[in-house]
Image (cartoon, rainbow, N blue to C red):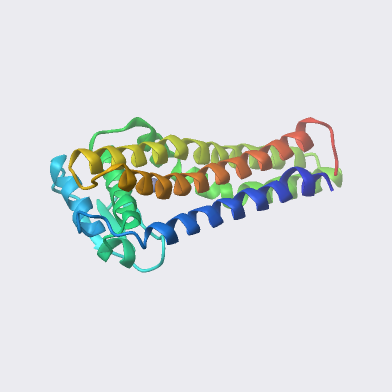
Length: 232
Ligand SMILES: [Zn+2]
């Protein structure tokens, strides 16, 4: 019951709310053409060139809102609508991904910390909670090592939560780089265009905030069980 009120319901509200906001902002501004007439791929290309980053490629990838920067291959992968589209949403998302390439090229510290955390964090988010559940059950049966398994799971899951928090400055910074470059390179003209791009990028950032909040709520719940002497 406590889990439902403290973790499950707020998590659903946060994640679904953020998803609805990002989809609606994307839907709205993917129908507003940018006056520059450039596609997302062209805008990202201009941003890379203006910042003297010649070694990052731009590729098309499948799936809606699947856009990302791959630092290992040094490639921006843009979904078809973003790659070919010349809407405010396309320009904003393409240049946000180019923002990650800029972070990489300029040695932006939070991006580096985040990339170091990736292996442990992805293991921790998959297995941390199973270890927690398993450890608490074992301890309930009186197995002495149950507590250790649970603590190890807690630590692993903690890294995953920390990862989702470190992701926030990385995402916000990529968006602010995108907005700044779109304006300074003259790819957006007028406050209405800037506002549209901001709406799309802010909504996208909200999904990361929701994910971090959900992860933190889960961790808090487990901390209560492990350190608060509760057994429910
Ligand atoms: Zn991003």
